[in-house]
Length: 214
Image 1 (cartoon, one colour):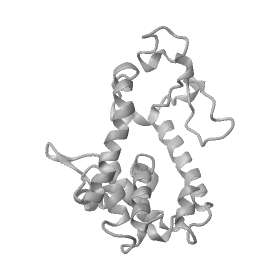
Image 2 (cartoon, rainbow, N blue to C red; image 1 turned 120 degrees about the horizontal axis):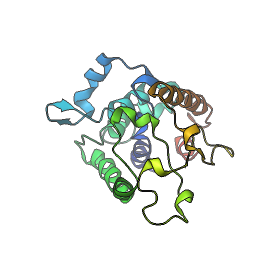
Image 3 (cartoon, rainbow, N blue to C red; image 1 turned 90 degrees about the horizontal axis):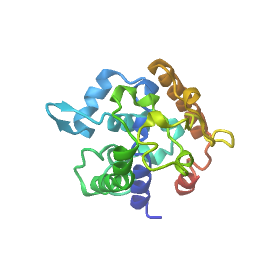
């Protein structure tokens, strides 16, 4: 695959990693965030927003020992650096950044409207880590409108690494943490496991295309 095409593809794949590898997971300082806000974040109503884009850039920088060297090389492929591509989707300034920004918006539009209208109630942004994925199977034999809010579900998917056991839903009360502290702890634990697994992926320095496929 052409190096620039591969760079765009991988950047698009990891562009939202900052929603998982966030400020707490990466131990980011306010100074780091402020120093990079103007580069990656949109500015609305007198303030910056979509901070996960900065966290994506930080992940690429801080996790460099677990990632292919190419991802932090300024001379890889043509155009933008990999970090600017991955982190620029909410503040695109170049054609290559717009490719990822448009793909992000199109893919989100396919599934977001229906869920927001039928299956979601307003969730304060500080509470998002307590939200769990809801199973489609629970709705199959239900009457229309039976699951118009999260509270009407009895099951959810646990926030755990995928495994033969964890692919099955669990009881909602058992799967949803009752405090934000517990929720954040679960995210940190999952992130730590993710980083360990990332370091075990082969071909990091020998074949980046094969690494990406794995």
